Image (cartoon, rainbow, N blue to C red; front, side, top):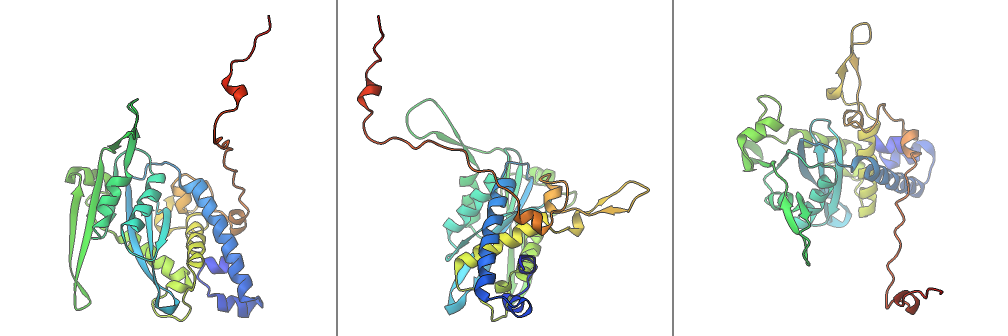
Length: 304
């Protein structure tokens, strides 16, 4: 049932085919999506050389005329989905949360960040990709911007609902840096994240452009997003990532985004994903409030 949900099957069809209650289907989706989010945080949100990242947002219609924005990002080279965030408003807070998600997956080094023409991205990237530097003085440590961070925007202009012009603009960095982080003769674009948006629209029943199965609660979309995104990373072969094998074997070896990113060496089955054991977070002793006990303040008596 969880595999059907991750592949885009509507819950009403699962209820009719398997004879389950609709509440049971959504309860299992919440549990599986919450587990997939923990797997994503444990395996994907680790520092690695991203090289090129694209980000975009999806406008999701909810019931009762409510609109929720879903912002997502991906690594271009491996097609790895880096995560997503939700918000009722398409404001700088939403973009800042997405920028922090991307930074959690990035290692210090050259990186190209490509988005659409939304102005909030530029400030969010610059705020996120900074590192605190300790000076030994009291107060807040200084924040040092990452070197060789290239920021690009792809602005599309429409007329009568038709695309008439596409403008690629470099906001930070030089043209030589952008070319070094891109494929040979590749222009600045956001095609990969737009293709990923189409995949999510096909696999999340509430994201179809014209349909009656609208979402009613934000947690349902949150768990569904991580369920689809984690299945996409670990359980699905990507045709553009296939690798040529040596002679004497089959010509092409299939590959998943997680395999291309070096997270795993094989394609996971749904059972392996849903039964993956996550290590508990390290124990941190709680801070003691109030004054220190007298025994801790006084020096210990040394016997003669």
